[in-house]
Image (cartoon, rainbow, N blue to C red; front, top):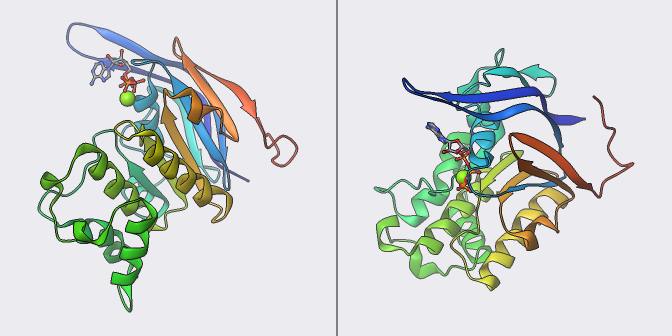
Length: 234
Ligand SMILES: Nc1ncnc2c1ncn2[C@@H]1O[C@H](COP(=O)(O)OP(=O)(O)OP(=O)(O)O)[C@@H](O)[C@H]1O
Ligand SMILES: [Mg+2]
């Protein structure tokens, strides 16, 4: 079953002086267990698309569905709490919380902060290539790439079935970028989560199960390696 379906979605930014049309009648579907990538050049509307998928705003026209229910009908706060985890382009870590508290934050939301949660945080931290000396530091004491990895660790900790990631490797060197992409791929292929990643990096794009390219307000499907495994319902 498709988790997220986008139907004829258009979006425009409206200010007093001008209207910017960013998305024009976009259609797409994203399934559980898929590593999905949306690529496109700067300004093509990738972050706008993710904001709509995250329910931070509603389309100017058209509909987005989660499991067949439109975002208009859903409680969008609950959508973000229970179903989604978002890695923002600017990380959005909590500046007053330590690295350990940032990563463990979703445990508090989902009621799983018990037992050996500290060990679980350590494991996740190691998985994104950071060591334990980071745990007591605050985000302001970390480099951009380190903050990015803490944001990814927090998403892994969340257990959310749908992960939205906006340029999650934008500040990382090749080795760390590869590690993060492999982490996200594993979350889709092994844990069955639906991962939707935005990038302009062609090396990441070519690893996608499903690849969409944004251009001129359109989002065109470029490759689907899951052909036959998922039913495409239009
Ligand atoms: N709040 C806003 N008000 C008006 N226009 C906006 C606003 N945010 C974005 N835009 C415009 O919408 C278009 C799409 O922006 P968006 O941030 O979605 O692009 P992007 O593909 O994520 O770019 P990048 O790769 O640089 O992050 C751009 O032309 C941008 O200038
Ligand atoms: Mg962007």
